[in-house]
Amino acid sequence: MKYRLFLSLILVTIVAVLAAVPVAAQDAEPTPFVAEVGPITQRVIDRGVLICGVNALLPGFGTTNDAGEFTGFDVDMCRAVAAAILGDADAVEFRALTAAERPTALASGEIDMLSRNTTWTLSRDTEWGATFAPTTFYDGQGVMVRAADGIETLEDLEGGTICTNAGTTTELNMTDAMESRGLEFTLQTFQDFDGVMAAFDEGRCDAVTTDISGLISRKATAADPGAYKILDIVLSKEPLGPLTSQSDPQFADIVRWTIYGLIQAEEFGITSENVNDFLDSEDPNIQRLLGQGGNPSGSYLGIANDFMVTVISQVGNYGEIFNRNLGPGTIFNLERGINDLWTNGGLLYAMPFR
Ligand SMILES: N[C@@H](CCC(=O)N[C@@H](CS)C(=O)NCC(=O)O)C(=O)O
Image (cartoon, rainbow, N blue to C red):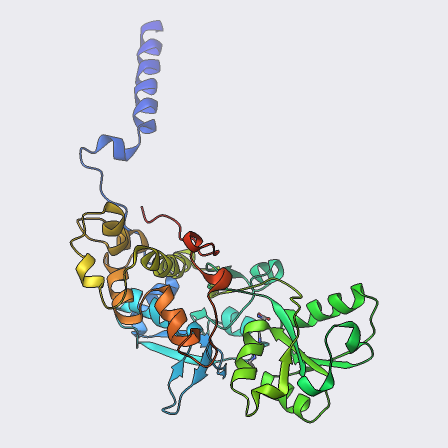
């Protein structure tokens, strides 16, 4: 009896030990990780098109050109993700959204991702059921007045009317800034910024407020840019970037790593012009970014291993996207400032591709 009990104990111990040995450790050749495609990625693949929510009223970030095509910095982020998943940067259907329409469009699944000058905040991250991708444009909120009015400070706006568009972070920031200074004012909101500017030009607003990038965009594209003045104040932090539904972390990973790939490509000096010259690079970090030399980069995301080759060759690296839409060759003439690579003193820092 004792002997049988002893045998059973040994058997139980052997089974327990075997069960505890990780499967990979039993394999002679560990198999590379291949991500299981998530539901949003799968619907994008089945449809053959990525549906991206964008701005149609913000030149430089999201607008339509004379041919009716969407262009801009945020628009290019959608194109990069389409290139990563579908191998074609043109396989995007754009949905023009007002600021207030964003949460519903995301939650209802009307869009696969949102890339519309959207500020990453705690309440949006949670209430919207969102997963924010890395910030693509570090911004802050500003105030624009008529140059002729002689307004220099927020104190000069006491008792006045300040206008902005509804459903934005700008409403609360403006209220905080005035209340903390003990200044009375009227905040008037409009559905979109065309409405804001129309009211401003008719003299119904003493100032308009939004992201500084938005003010620069509106000023630069106005009939008489000299009629406006952007005050020398920054009211808030406005980290802008794409986001997706938190229901599909695998799709969120694809968006996240596509953006890191754009930033990392700029850091390595890999551009749409020279990407093919890097395919036989012996630098293991470049091989990993480009999915060359047997490196499984894309498999980790369930997409083509060389997805970043496609993205860079079709859309360019982060710097190319910035310059094409906002840089010195454009009417906006934006400096990189904090939106430069960390190696140049900016905030852009891609996580390692490994
Ligand atoms: N970043 C802020 C503001 C976003 C926003 O809607 N900005 C305005 C001004 S730049 C805009 O996009 N206007 C375009 C429009 O009229 O819809 C947010 O996420 O709430």
